[in-house]
Figure 1 (cartoon, rainbow, N blue to C red):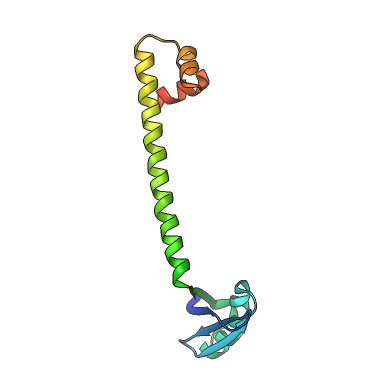
Figure 2: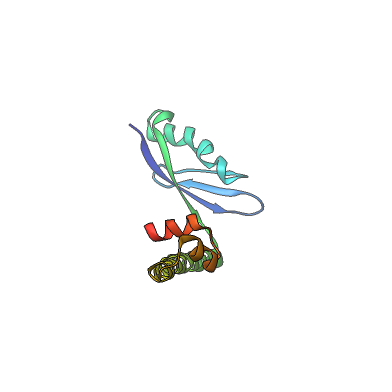
Length: 126
């Protein structure tokens, strides 16, 4: 059974990541963040008195506030775009239904909507 430790990583001076596992008092540094787990595993296992194979980490990075704000805005915009895409698909289905209920063939509906007759069939089945 593995035990999960919080591994805090913060960009230090130069090209180094400063690492800390406060629970056991382990500290170190690495050049690349993807090296953090391997770098800390042996020390944390030793200080916690458990085998290395039982050590796992929850890596928590301290990031610049500007980055966090930009990522939050990007997430918000993606959610808006996803909602707009779903709404556009609903409207395309409704448009296809109107034309089909007006007696047009699948090919005619497809021609008017700029899609294949197969796509029209998919829209109507959804």
